[in-house]
Structures are given as C-alpha cells and as structure tokens.
Image (cartoon, rainbow, N blue to C red; front, side, top):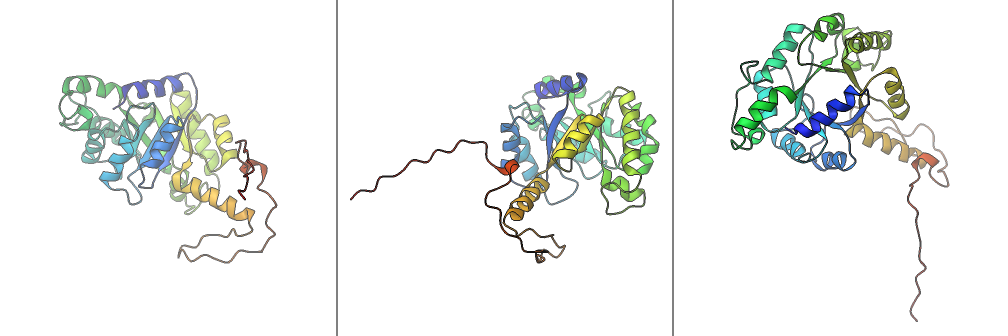
Length: 297
C-alpha cells in the first residue's frame, strides 16, 4: 500500500480536482509502467472480466511501486477471500462490482479492514513487507485503503442515498453498460433514459460530499464527463485505446472496417483514397530533422 500516493489522490479529490487513470485488461505490466511514466493518478486492474491471473495482477501492482499512481484491483465479486488476497499482494484498494445495498457495501469495507473495525486477516505478504512491517501497515491500512463500489444496476441507483451513508466510502464508480442491461437495454452503453438517470445519481452522490468515477468513451466524452462533475476519470481501457488508435490509422489508409465477433474481418464498406498525410490530431508533435548522408565514392 502506497500511503503517500493515496494521500495525494484524496487531496486532489478533496480540492475538487480530477484524477485521471486507465483501465487495465491486458497481461503486459509494461502498460502499467507506461501509465506510471505518464503520471496517471490511478489504474484499475480488471480481475472481474477477462483472463488475468494472479501472477499477472501482481506484476501490474509491482509496476506501480514507489510511484504516485494508485493501483486498484476490480475483483470478480464481493468476497472476503478475494479482497484479502488483493490487498495482501499490495494493491492500494479494491473496486467491488454489483454493489446494490448498504449492507453489501458495509461488508466490503469490513473485508478490507483489520479488526476490531473489520474482518481482514493479517498475513506476512507484500503488504506487510513479508512480515517486517506488521505494526506500521496494520496501524495505517484501515485509514488509507480505498473501497470503490460500482453502481451498475437500477437497484443500486434506487438505493444510492443509503449507500452514501456507509462510513469509509467516499468514491463511487459508474458502469453504464450493466446499468443499461438492468434497465432493459442490453448491449447498449447508455440505453434510453439511462444517461439522465446516471447524472441524477451522480448529483445525489456529489450532494453528500462524495465523488464519482466513470470511463470516457472518447476525447470529447472525457471533457464532457469532467464538465458534468465526474472526478475519477478513466481515459479508457488499454484495449479500447489501442483499438481506437488502430481504427483511426486504418481509416487514414482507407482500410478501416468493423470487427466481427468471429474475429474474421469484414470487408471495408467503401474503398477510399488514402490521405496524403495524417490528419492534424494524429501528427507527431516532435520536430524531425533529416540529415543528408554523403555517399562515399
């Protein structure tokens, strides 16, 4: 647990400043190293969906050591064993999916806290410096650990006032796609009426002096979410950002096409003439200097 990073993270939120981060779904720890090198405030390692195993999760956590980047792990479900293991290997907090009631949220906080306040067992793992820092870690962990519930169902939205009353939770993340599914609009990011509902829930959370997080779908949406009052802003997921860049580059050469669930590429809709040079937003900001080489006779 990086208490200095967590303090900086909370200070930014307390000052109503945005904290920017990245959703990690791929196994390469180099992605987390890039996030750290670029000064991102946080990363979330997704252990709910996808294929990441514990060794890969640990490597992502290690990539943030001695940095100001807070590392959270989204666990697969509300489970004491999963929360304990994530925190034992050094995560700064947990993101808990499908939280719908205050009782569930209280459980999550208890599982992430040492007794007497909570139910977390103490182990001789990375979090305690392999047993060398028992006292220091045990004294500061409960105060600094982040427990972030995801509001991703209609039921959670209806119970938001009660959820806001749970002690030890000051940050909520939104899951528009799952919320849309529970509202009867499966497969849509924000189905009919869902965008307005999420903004109303966000206002209730903000009125309680707490903060909201969400993943942006593109550059314009990132600015829009910031203006709407979201403060934990996801630039995107690693796969989403990569695919967005690939689509843009393929579009430049007239080869962009939709992806199929079978992974068999569909034909491009219409062949287009490649642009003579990339669009301005895609051009490098580096000054290139070309030196003429002299040929030896």
